[in-house]
Image 1 (cartoon, rainbow, N blue to C red):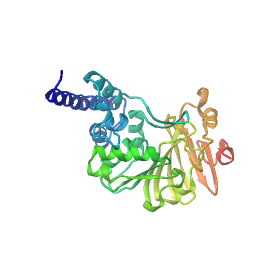
Image 2: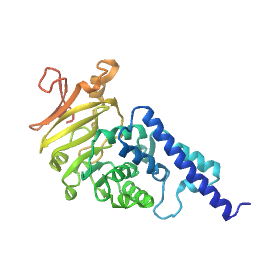
Image 3: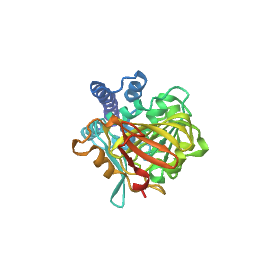
Image 4: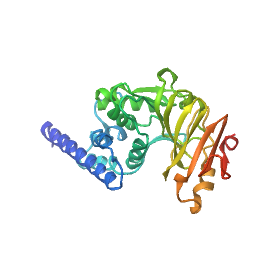
Amino acid sequence: MTGPADGREDDERCRVAARALRARMVRRIVAGGGLTDPAWRAAFAEVPRHLFVLGYPPDDETPQWAGGDLRGRLRGLSGAYADRPIATHVIGGELVSSSSQPSLMALMCEALRVADGHRVLEIGAGTGYNAALLAHRLGPGAVTTVDLDAEITDAARAHLAAYGTPAARSVAVVTGDGALGVPDRAPYDRIMATCELPLIPAAWLEQCRPGALLLAPFATGLVLLTVHGPGHAEGRFLHTPAFFVPLRGAAGGGAHGGIGEELFGRGRHPDRSRFGMTVADGRQWVWLDDPDGPDVWDVTSAAR
């Protein structure tokens, strides 16, 4: 039989284990070339991923990972800090939300090149973990995250509250169609999408300051665009492949996996950074080396 003292001892062992696992996760990302920015390294070292991916029900003061025997709790913590994605929400047999693998999240956070004073919109709230990382880096009042399903946003809001730092509690978690952005909290200096897109939504560009950066999964890759004004953005793909659940809502569907295969499949062009994307004059197109060159793919018509 175990008593209160045994339970407290187990809780402390789990807290120590979580800190050690988080430190190991960061070391492995750094060894792979990531988290070169000390501010991002601190965020990943301090934000407790297990509170977000193992659950913290809004109506229960005890996180799910704290239940059960000590061995099971430690096993759950180990899984939370493994460098792998974790499925979190399935609707009608379809995966609609997940937590990306930490090394990919680190790459995306650093690629966004945030700075103090920036306001960030995240499309796809997920568990709230990515919003917590952004809030850790930027401080209170800087981060807005949106998702289509109240079940997802309720959970993200509860996880952020459970983490409980002023920055985390300040994140604005909005239930709505991500393709429409969140105009009430615009303008934004950065937009990060965590869902595969069929096209870049016009509303996002309208809600950005000139010179803002927009990072989004597209055609099995990640494209980083500079916003030059409403209806005009341009940039290049990052070097890494990336696979995300598709955007849902009015602008959802038709994610460009087919174009991704045409561009990057079977080793045709191993250097993804040679590719770019332009949004201008009501059109959107992907290009190789030069936006005005001969190798272009019109994605506006392909998405219709």
